[in-house]
Length: 345
Length: 196
Image (cartoon, rainbow over all chains, first blue to last red; front, side, top):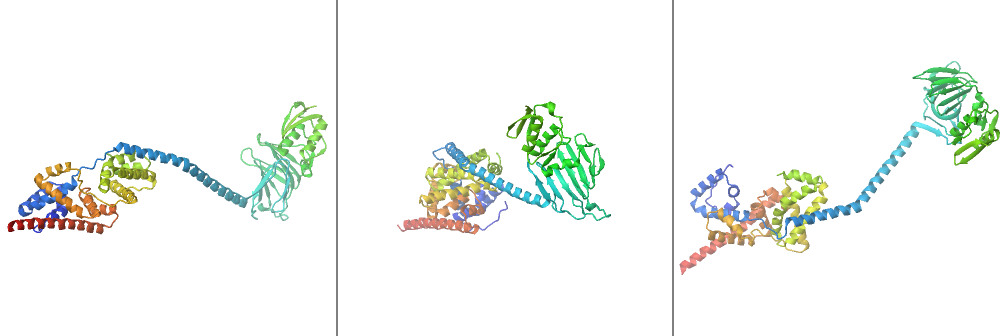
């Protein structure tokens, strides 16, 4: 420590007591401070008493032993630890449920906002129509194309159809399309075509009437009017042009397209609340009941599965169909909720 | 020994054993400081309990600190003074503990003055301190016993640094005034003796 040599002539006990250098020396003496103050003591012999007194003051205050309370440190810590534990328990009882509740409310609010935003966003981007089991719905698209949805079916498409792009629609289940012809004669453009995405097929049409049935792994396409091109991209790619009256069946599990021996008109009979049974086996009819009307069916007479029917039956609802097959095949039908157990009477 | 600051950080992050280490380290100095304000141990214990329970409760909002000692002294002082205030006790402060004669031994060992002379000095200092206000006495304690810097004392007593200097100056002034009086007394005694 650099010692500043002061004039100590007027120093009293109090002056030494408040002198920073002196305090430092008394409390934390080092060789330098000892040498310094020994010199001052030699230079000012009349100040020795004052210096000693000031030194005593400082030490009297500084060197006091800390107060020792009667009770112990450990007992006090135990009291503190107990109170901390009690406080935390109370907090858990009172605040934790509140905290959890507020957290849940927060999460619920966030989820709600997200849901609303998502709905808003998705409805902006996409239009969706779907039907439940046994219900039918007719949808008119922005280009006036009419789509009739059978039960348990859905379509969706981009809300805004840009004029320079082909009209595109995605479907599941069964639907009958009456596509509006927009192309001018002899001036066919990309934007004039109408694309239906079903299974992993792409159906490209102009103005046409056709029925698409996509159930299980089978997609049946029946063309009534106009022209239709089936395209399959990727593995097992193919292109097939259909003429009016053609009906084709594509099995996506086997990736094969086969011609169906069926009158396309029959495949759209459902749009008139009828069912054309020509060429249908009983098991196919039962599949329709499952796919379109939502039944679960157990056929306990397997010998009947491949039996065929002919004719048109009313099919406004499933009961009509059930009535007919019961009478024709002489069946016993036990119904438990939507579960049908069919057996030979 | 682990640094105070690290222990403090441990406590702030929710380690109760760190709080116990802090309590262990500061129990005696804080109790001693509290004892200067009141000689009722129960109040000091209550204040310490209150302080440490509060520290734990508020651990998440407590900042890191340069000096754990200063933080604890400041908080403890506030808690204790509020308790004393509620009990309508006067702000008092004791610098020299009159019940602790054993201290003298230590002071005696470190000075070259006689035991009798030291006893006189002690009595004089004690009387001079009694003339001071409690706040002046506290500042003397913090400066000479706790060896705090003026900035630390200012933060602890919640006054400005310049006020701290003024307070020390006034305290020393009381000391000088008292001492010159005693000197005068001795002087007059000598004169009167001469007269006889």
